[in-house]
Image (cartoon, rainbow, N blue to C red; front, side, top):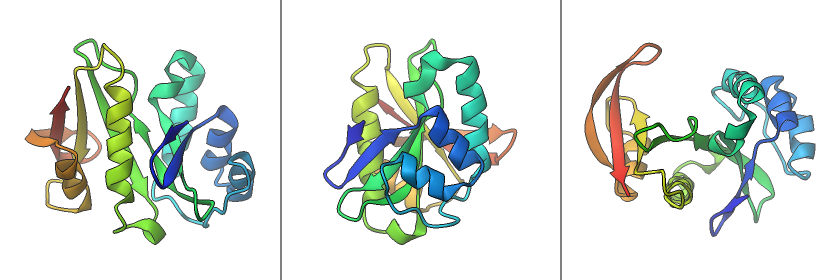
Amino acid sequence: MLKTKRMFLMPATAKMLDAAAEQNWDALADLLGGVSVDANWTQFPESFAYVREHLQQHPDEKNWWNYFIVVGKDARLAGNCGYKGKPSPEGTVEIGYEITERYQKQGLGTEVAEVLLRHAFKFAEVKAVVAHTLPEENASTQILRKNGFSLVGVVQDDTDGTIWRWQKKK
């Protein structure tokens, strides 16, 4: 488990990913220790099935994928975050995060990105952390700048089209 001053980042288990992929929020709430989970809290429910299937084939990567974000004082799910796989041979790992609407504009995204960075840089093989955003100024670009990321270029993604690539070196 990773922690910030206000949150716990719970590593996703196979059962948690199953519940999230099936959008069974009651089961997910139980698996997270009885926290409150708002219906339709995520914009990307299909991502949980992808992660679940990937981890079935690569169980050694479990700590390099999904975490559920729980706000401690509220005992409520505030989103999910994690890495997009283990570090590359070049030593790069990608982070991503999603904060529920209820908790946006409260600095939680900044805290999440910070703890993901700190955790990744504990590993000797990680030389840099990257993130991708829409090609426009938005909340994610502000979060990344606050955490010391620099905009390093424009990328063409097969799914998302033109996106911005951000990076922070160790």
